[in-house]
Image (cartoon, rainbow, N blue to C red; front, top):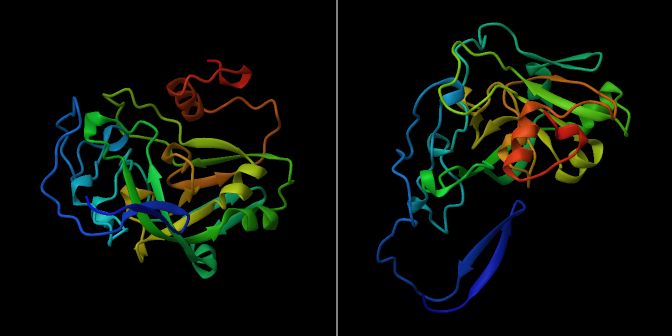
Length: 251
């Protein structure tokens, strides 16, 4: 590749661009790369996956088409989409109509699974244009204290036990600093269209700069807990993967 490299930022996502002319001569696999299928959903529910084919990346096209955006867990067969969806936030019930009326573009953000490895060609990473509602504003409306610890939970029932090491646990506890610092939002659309069920429809949490395991899908409850609250199973699994230890992380 001729020329030098410069960094550019789009919606908080850093990209490396090269000056000068270059020509793609081909792609090579990662060392010990797996043979997982790319750009196509496989398996169901907690075992369901979809890996993005990174060989199609184009420096002039930053957005991953929704049909190719990675999936870590597919939608439950038990998820009820036939009745109106709402989110319990403290003493409030937030309807989808209410969220849609407040939704605004939230920018272009990259999302990556904490378990992204060469086994699936590092295909658990994608970029989308998101629309939604800032979470901080909803917390203020619901009267949450600034010092509260805030679990965000999603629908977490499945028709069959998983056949992989995946476990239920669609919940993560945040501080208000986590939420404000990341500019977290409740997403209802990606790439100009409503979320798909596999991507968290009708509403999912998005935290720019955080791993996807904290970006809860199928959000249905937001509440407040005190400092004694134990870490969720999802948090514990992430902590084990990243070799973290602490009082709240013990099984």
